[in-house]
Image (cartoon, rainbow, N blue to C red; front, side):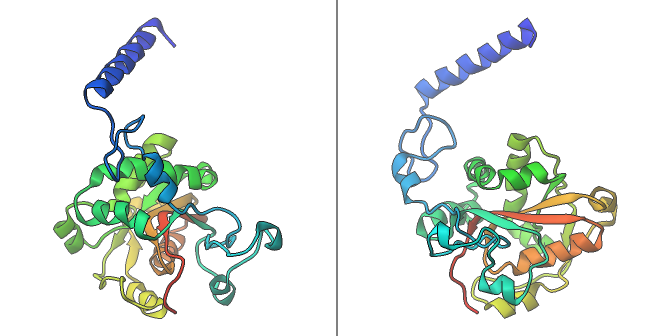
Length: 255
C-alpha cells in the first residue's frame, strides 16, 4: 500500500469514528445503539433463528434431529419426491416473526437501507456458494410490480453481496415476462403453476450466462417454485450450475 493510500484510509477511518461519536450507529431493527453501522443489537441477534446443520443437502431445509443422526447428504421429503432444478440452496434465517421485522419493511416500506445488514448475514450463510459462483443474479420483478414498488429487493441484495464479496453481478440477466399473482397464500402446487414459464434470460445477457456457475439471490425461499422457474430459464440459456441464496427460508409450508 502506498503512503498516499494509507493516509487516505486513515482519514476515512478517523472521519467514520468521529461521525459515530456524533451520530452513533443504531440497530437495524430496534434502533438501540450498536458498535457498528448496519448491525444488530444483542437482543435482536438472539431473537433470530439461524439455519445451520443438520439440513437438507439440496434445499437447505433444517431438520429437527441431532446432527449425528443425519447423513451429510440427506435429503428432505420434498427433494426426494421431486429433485429441484437448482444444485443447492441455503438461507441465513428461518422466516418467522423476528426475520419478518426486517423483510417486510425492506420489501414493502422502502427500508432499502436494510440490504447491507441482510447481505452480511447472507454472506456468512452462503460463503461457499458465493466463492464457487462466477456471478450473482437477482430474481426479477415484473415491470408493473417494479413500477409500483420502485425497486427490486433481490437486486439490492445482489448489489450489496457483490460489493462485500467482490463477485460480478448480472442484474438484468432474467426477465419476468409474465405477470404472476402474489404467491403469499398459494399452496406448493399452485405456486409452481403460477410461475411456470414466467421467466426468460434476456438476449443481451446470454453471453454472460452461458457456461457460467451462477448464484440466484432472493429475499425469501418458500417452496422453491420461483427459484426453480428462474433456474430452468438460466439452464436453458447455458448456465452450468445454479445455486440459490436467500435471506430467510419458510420452514413449514402448505402442500
